[in-house]
Length: 297
Image (cartoon, rainbow, N blue to C red; front, side, top):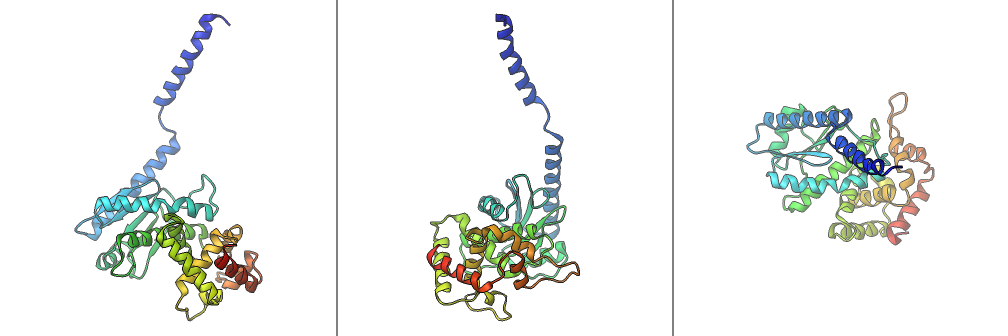
C-alpha cells in the first residue's frame, strides 16, 4: 500500500465517525422519547386536575416521580427508587432488553391522605383504598399513599415508596396473576431493604426479625390463612426473600406464573401455585426456609 493511501485511511475513519455522531437517532429511540414525553405530559395534566397547591415531577432513568413533595425531595426519592430496579429485574428474570411496561412508570407519591383520596377519586376515578396499580396501560402508573406510621422519618417514607415500586415489577411479571398480598408486600419490602445495602440498619433489623420468626416456629401457611399472625409482615419478608433471592430463586418466576388463573378464570390456591413451581411438599419447603432463615444456608 502506498504512503498516500495509508495516510488516507485514518482520515476516512475519522470522517465516518464524525458522520455517525451527526446522524439522527434511530427511529426506535425517537419513538421511545415520544412515548415518555407523552407520559410526562399526562402525569402533569393529572396533577393539575387534582388541583394540588404544590406539585413536582422528577424524571429518572425508569420513573416519573409525580408528587406533592418539593422538587428536590422528588429527585432524592427518584434516586432511591432506582436502587430497586436491578434487584427486581434480576429476581424476576427479565431479559436485558425486556421492559415490564411501556416507557416509564409514573409513580404518584401522595403522603397527605386528603391529597391521595382527591387524586384517586378525580383522576383514577376509583374509591381510595391502598396502593393503586395499572402497569399495563399506555401510561403505566402507581399511586402511593405512603402508608407509614405518623412519626415515620423521610427515609422510612422513601423506603415505603421503593417497596411499592418493587412490587410493581412483580405485578408486571405476573401479568394476569392474582398475586397474594403477602407475596407482593414481602417482595416489595425486602427488595427495598436490599437496595439500601446489606449493612444498612433497616436490612440488619430485617435479618434479626427473620431469624426470630423462624426460631419461634412460624408457619408459612399462616401467610394465606384467614387470620393473620401478629408477625405476618416479618414472616412475609423472610419467606419472600427466601423465594426471590435465596435458595428458591430459580423457581421464583414459576411461582409467580403459578398464581395465574386457569382457562376457566379460577384463581389457583397457594398450594396449587407452589406445586406449579415445583414445590409439591410444603413441609419440606418450610423446613428449608427455616434452616436458611436461621443459619443463612
